[in-house]
Amino acid sequence: MPAVKARSRRVLSAEILSLQAFVIFLATALIYGVPAKAQDQAGRLTVELNKFEDDPGGSCRAFFLFRNKTGLTLEGFEMSLAILNTGGVIDRLLTIDAAPIPVARTTLKLFEIPQTRCDSISEVLLHEIGSCRPQNSDEIDCFPLLDLTSRTSAPLVQ
Image 1 (cartoon, helix red, strand yellow):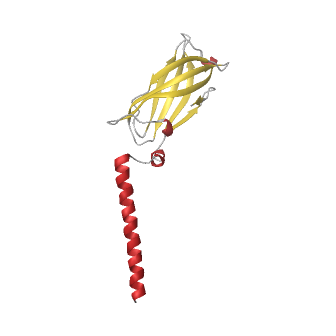
Image 2: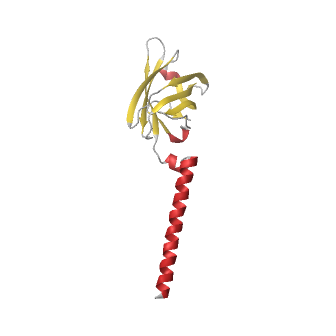
Image 3: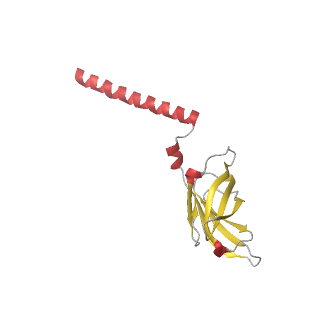
């Protein structure tokens, strides 16, 4: 019977150590933030270049869909894009403000690429996110949350 009591004490000690480790982890997460791996699993923001449409004035309209599964409403979201021509050369830089991006919704945003025909665009490069600010919070790095896709002839890449 004494061997059973000693074994029970070891099991109880192991459970207490596990509980203490969990409390330390939780306290660390609250103080220093959620670990990056947990942030990556929080959800994704898909940015889809859905369609190009030529404007009679010689510009190209770009239709973007934003599918926000991050769990956060983004009250600030600004992207800087490089538009590459058919020769692969940067034709122009654009900064677009796509905010707000509501949580758990798909949002359509339309942007004009001035003085550019749609068929002259070979690629759209997302080279910077100038702002990514969740509602009632500070700026965050959104690049790890992004999935980029394109249904046009021009890929959307980072």
